[in-house]
View 1 (spheres, helix red, strand yellow):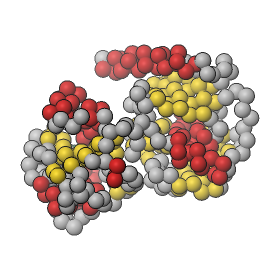
View 2 (cartoon, protein in one colour):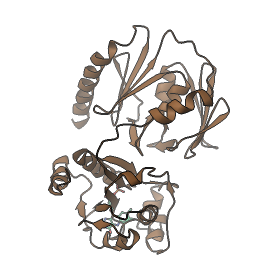
View 3 (cartoon, rainbow, N blue to C red):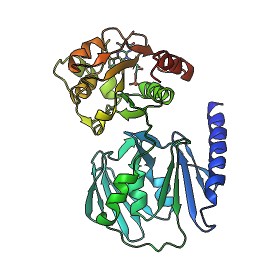
View 4 (cartoon, helix red, strand yellow):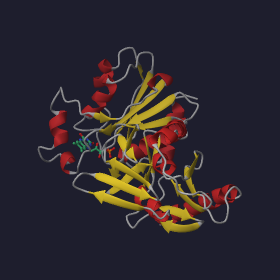
Amino acid sequence: MKKILLAIFTLIFFCMTAVAVNAAESDNDLTIRLKIDSPLMLVNNEEKSIDENGTSPVIVNSRTLLPVRAIVEEIGGSVEWNSDTKTVGLQSGDNNIQLEIDSATAYLNNEPYTFDTPPAIIGGRTMLPIRFIAESFGLEVSWNGEEQIVTIVKKSDVQTETVTFAETATEITTAEETSESDNNILVAYFSATNNTKGVAEKIAEAAEADIYAITPAIPYTAEDLDYNTECRANKEQNDDGARPEISGTVENMEDYDTVFIGYPIWWGQAPKIMYTFMESYDFNGKTIIPFCTSGSSPIGSSAENMHSLAAGADWLEGQRFGGGASADDVSGWVNSLGLK
Ligand SMILES: Cc1cc2nc3c(=O)[nH]c(=O)nc-3n(C[C@H](O)[C@H](O)[C@H](O)COP(=O)(O)O)c2cc1C
């Protein structure tokens, strides 16, 4: 039922946007629209599933990552995945892109280009920063932050030409930003199984804040999280000096006065990757608001034990949520903080 409602909701959103945008597009253009967290896409206003796995676009580190295969194949290109080297090759017309999972360097027609959100495998699908790919392939990309919809247009009258890194780089770096709000609030969270992610997104919505996913350089597998065994998570929690590496950074941390930090409770405490995060920035003068999700444990001493890692910060009392906390529960708490 939830899925059906989501599909109807998505379709209504898409229809509204399609009417608004269509005026600028010619009948022969190919238009693909995708919505964050929706497994459906509209190709020339015809609804399709992105794939049989229910893959949806996501926002990671304020960058939109899209399931690339569906899009590249829609525009008549091809995708080659090499599971041994974890590399993806994309071909459209004369242009070729080579990417490596979790590497921030891509090669466009053999020219290297560095971006801040590396390709990732999410739910078994390769997710790529779409603006880089689309613009490299001569497609137009627009982002509607309010509706969270990405529109990709392949113009019928544009000849495919070989593009180079130099021609596209400036546009990519400036245009790749998504809907950053005017607020000076950031929600930074780590989530191994998406419970904290769900709460973090609701907080960001209620507080009109930017959101940043603390992404481990080495992702946690199900085995790593199997706390009934000598798993990686347990080992890290038992090691005071463990500081798991983070992939990516918050480049504009100085812009934020208030930072929510969110994490799952692991053995009563914050995962050690949160310690890595806290030690990576200067929080002096900022307000920090901790939140967590857990099976049942309270937030307890988990936030207090990080106070020493953020000298000069003003720590507010933290809040624990269950994994499936409702938007009302979350916004009720956010509103009680009186941030706006
Ligand atoms: C290694 C490990 C230790 C955990 N320890 C606790 C705990 O002490 N108390 C608790 O209530 N839940 C515990 N949990 C459950 C998580 O806190 C809970 O599932 C959380 O919502 C997961 O958030 P995430 O999906 O954002 O990773 C633990 C989970 C893992 C993987």
